[in-house]
Figure 1: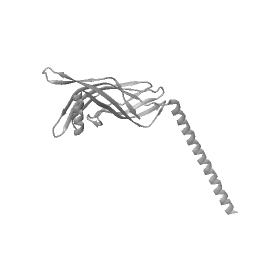
Figure 2: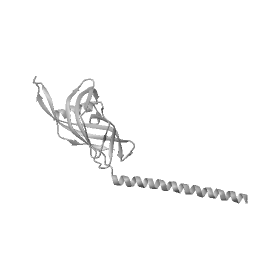
Figure 3: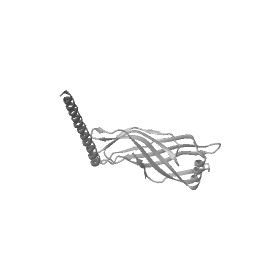
Figure 4: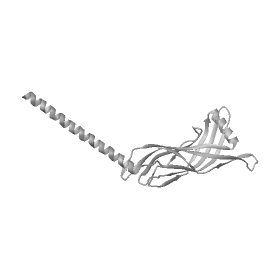
Length: 211
């Protein structure tokens, strides 16, 4: 009889364990369904970035044992939160300029902030690069582009953001934006009659954004 009671006790504990496991799995399923429903209702959309202006204040390429590029740029970037029910926290935003995949300015740090529903933020940072080495093929390509009268540079943004829905705030997501800057280079004359490039930014451009 004692042996039968022991078996009965084990069977009872096994049934209790199965009930607890079923209750736990049911709770997980309900939570996942709730998250899915909220996600489908809110439909979060990644932020939009635009390059509104691009000014080349200095852009000197020197040839020697190594090609070195010194540049000073000012760019105007804007970001819009297209979501009607979701806010966005920008916790870190680094901006720099690149040519054919190579970064040629140091990163400029934009102040962190919060974008409410359909809000817009605008920044106008300066970007600096002093004697940045370029690969020989990039230096040749850059010289050819300037001689041809055009430059295609890129302004890139790397950062982290969080979504805000009501009082709930998500974890961090990586943000990457890539903004093309198409520039027209015209020959000009300075007061000393030495050739001086005149560079014009063509138009406001939309950036590709990955979150």
